[in-house]
Image 1: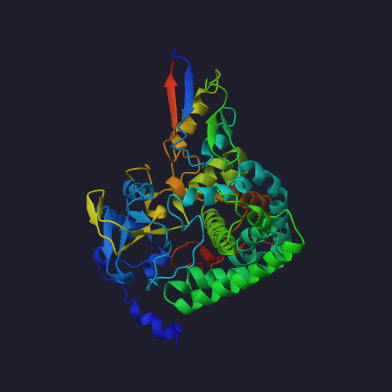
Image 2 (image 1 turned 60 degrees about the vertical axis):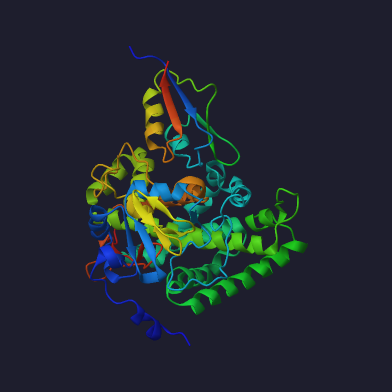
Length: 406
Length: 69
């Protein structure tokens, strides 16, 4: 019953961003920054009747107030969609509220500390070079399709203990859940079921053949009463790690390369001053934050003086917060040695991204290895850069030229 | 001559972004969950004052306090 033709007409082009915003409008997808600036100058929180009713905070302050307020705002739905079915596919801890949130999160934190990431770093460096080997002789490539897309998939597969070659399957599911799923319930549920069946097989295998990977870590975890986690919990957390760990970092690496392709001065400076890299990575995270989360309003309250009512969703735009000039001087400029940078790319409050140290390490390694092998590159004027739609923003086509001499 | 600096991480506010550890590794330790604690008694050795302020101004949760003794 559902095909894209029957679904699309539900979203007419936006003519009034302040009262009728739509984060799936092609203009938002292409260049959301001027839209956020316009909305921020009107009101810290705007509303649309689309998506069954949804608010959008555009200031750092409003985003922070909502992120810290787990009493009025629930995380049980973290994607703003056209439909709001009662039964949602949970993925603890991202879809958990207090008091369930903390124990679910603590299970996942130890494998993602900076020290744990240092152990994974050599493998990620090797992955980057294996990928570059495949296209460097061509003098050009689609950096999204050939490079950025594959790094996080292979890294998370390595951590989970599943074959890196299954990456294309994961990418297909993620596209169905995060992009098609906004408007197409069948695409979303189909992908959730396929993913569940895939992981059920891997869990089953480990019951007789224990391993020391992240799937086994979750299977061996005990809750506060000393009981093993339910299969639903394990599956939900695996779903989270796969969905949250892949196109987010793919997007962040891609946006950074897109910026560097467009900005030779920043590229040359990073090559000349490699010690700037950690600060530059934080600035790329601020300026091109890939992830927008969602909350559901549970009780009436006010945010930055604006009333919000239950029954509505909230598009929790960390990317818009990170472009707020009240918080960041020259917010619309990429300043790769920015000194003060309290960016919220990984969220604020209890839901701080569990994989933030992984994402940072992958971004750093991916940019370092690229610049070592391909120091001089630019966008290919014969190609077209395209950006993903919806909840996670980053380049999905990134055609670049770099000359055969490299 | 400015006084000696002391840092403290508010455990109720820290969410484990680990920005402080990356900017000032000498001044912070992370626990098994990745949450930050001031190293030792929080005294900032001479020469590391700038790093202390840098960590403070980059904490997204405003969890780091820097005081002058």
